[in-house]
Length: 103
Image (cartoon, rainbow, N blue to C red):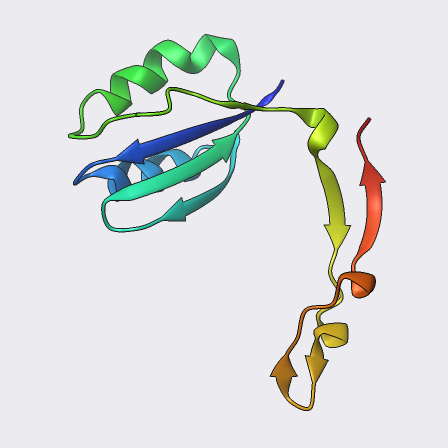
């Protein structure tokens, strides 16, 4: 299953994101007051029910439903103690270890 992105705009976008993220096929959600983004891998048979739920709310999906390419995805393991220097957060590319790259 490809990863799909659901981007919502509207007054109730945060409500829809909170509903979807509780379903087992969704992995992550970024929620703001008037927009939200949910990433997941919903199977085909659930789309009818999914869109019935979404259509009940005052929201729009301006980007429709983008699909993420697996070729551009990779998994990282962050060791957070390597990103602290003198009690401050730092970011250094050489401290990120790529575990698996999908090609």
